[in-house]
Amino acid sequence: MKTFKSITLVSLSILLISCGATFNVPIDKNKLVSNATIKFTNKNFSISKDEIFLLSEKSLESNKVKQSMDLYNITDINWVLKAFKKNKYISYDITISNPKYPKPYYGKIAFFNTNGINEMSAVSRYREISIDDNYFLSSTRGRVAMMYEYTETNVSLIKGAAKVPTWIILMSDEPF
Image (cartoon, rainbow, N blue to C red; front, top):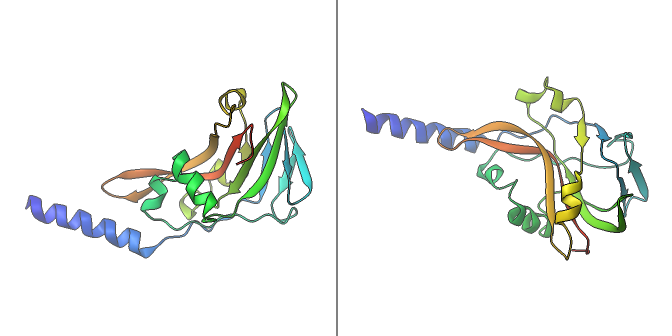
């Protein structure tokens, strides 16, 4: 009986993953809540503290990730760095400035859709982009810091919930 339950759980997990549910509920509205300015270097515009902007008005795209085991890695900095370098996700080059720090920081930002389960939650209404001072302090001497806002979703019955970002920022005091 125990073996039957194990086989059933594994089969259901494989079925859920193979269905390839896509995070296709768009989040258009965004707000920068940090005391910083983010300049989108290739798009030639900037956003400042408390500024609300729409992806659609800025010609920015969100990633529609598929529900897969990759979601367990999407909040791991080394995995995300490799994924960004391989252009696995749509990301934008940014320069971040903060009045507390004299030099600019360089980075990448990516936006992600959410899924139907979270469609009515607060996170699907708008993204709150926040860069805490600790990230400026930890991304010096070429080190890369990563920050994100996320929702949780069940990807596997065995592994449980995965953190699925609505946005990710990688930043460093040196271009990467």
